[in-house]
Length: 439
Image (cartoon, rainbow, N blue to C red):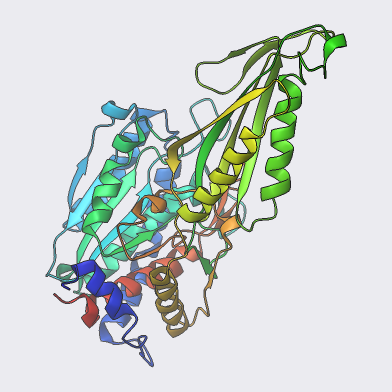
């Protein structure tokens, strides 16, 4: 049987030893020197970026940040383009490519947008002390974008970038995906299909001693329940039954009883409406209900999300939830639907674990110590998940360490910019030199 290129690479991953550099080689020392030389420039670039509002729906601001990073990558010899997001209602993405020699193909993932829109009170940067910057998007994830650019500069100055094939996708709608999501994430998915290894530069869990080898996916569900409207004095009779609200309560309680103990699986009912009538908002974020205390509820609607660490776990949970929904109280009915247009899970695949081993070895060679895997419960959904099923090796959390993402107290640790760039650049270099990627 003839194996595909990616299948062959995957086989070879487990048939070769880990890198055994006792110390950094000549090229790697050049990488370190270049990072140190350009760290202050990178910090200046980061300050410029965080002081441009790029809330997802501020299209002009998102594109402005894209232009800022595009200029940097142009200077490094990348072919760059800012795509249009008109087809999915967003600003578009920055895509940069560098064609090297046949061999390893890398996909690097960042994003240009933040959660802080133009009406947010959080619009500018300040220094908490000599190393902690407080700024919108400093950790999530303009700091990670700057780490990518600093790593690319170091590879170029070390004379090794020309041999490497790298595609960078910085999306403009990571925080609030465009619709349809298939178009919103097309550039990202297409890049993953071309790549062997995907590296995400999100913050992870804020700890520079960790990276993310698994992220839970995120999708939503809707429960619609019906009952018989009648005078409350007739509830529980054979003719009237229990009503919609009791049935909705039964279903939610069974969801909790049967599934809440499963590791890394969560399902949250975000809101519930019930009564004689229910009117939902068009965007599905809420609505209104009418009822009286002496009338049995005829309708109930519940909206929620579900997060799983793998597609298998998600499918098992759906099967259990669907079975629960069919075991109705008397004279009630229920329908459960799932919206799978969210973020897929990034399962803790063997290739991802092997990439963690490579990364921790590099970190130790640099004197930064071991690196550990983030608990999936501590890592939200992110763009790296769209590479699942397309690459055999993927990790995230290579960006700037910080705290309080998505809040007006968001901070980034500027001391970590150079450390993260060194680890990432040498990881890419060593992977590119490995014989398993030679074709």
